[in-house]
Length: 181
Image (cartoon, rainbow, N blue to C red; front, side, top):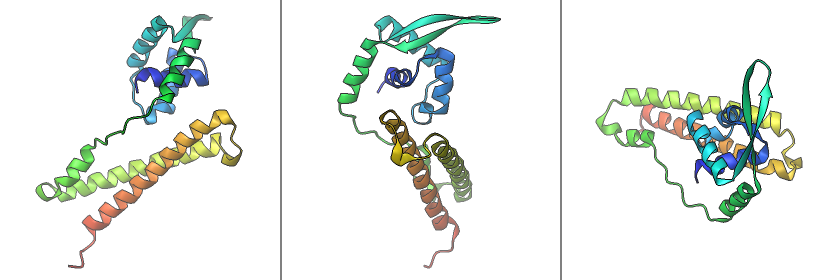
């Protein structure tokens, strides 16, 4: 996947200025596809050149004019083409997992501290996702077709954070409780 596809998805949901798109990215898509605001603006310019998005200048009182981007027919066609192609397997790359492998050679106490911090981060993200689910999808059995994709992604985030907490709990149990050996 390219950043272009993440932007197309966001613009298919709702047109936005580059600034609003970057803020929306930070609040949702950015949880699983990272991009800096600079990257988003650079890619938007390229996508406009390619005809996947079009912009309209909107005057603002007391502030510079802003460009509002919308997905074009060509952008929708690209999004349809991309969604029809199989998704390659995503390979996990985790510095944390390598650190755990280094347990016999390093500072076990520092690794335990790292696991505790990681667990706290999972708990915070889980609370954020659950709050978002309650706010945006209070009745998941009654979702409109347009809401289903967003809800499924949010469910994936919730399940991922729950798994992260469970893994941290297992690690902490093994590293901090006396072994029955």
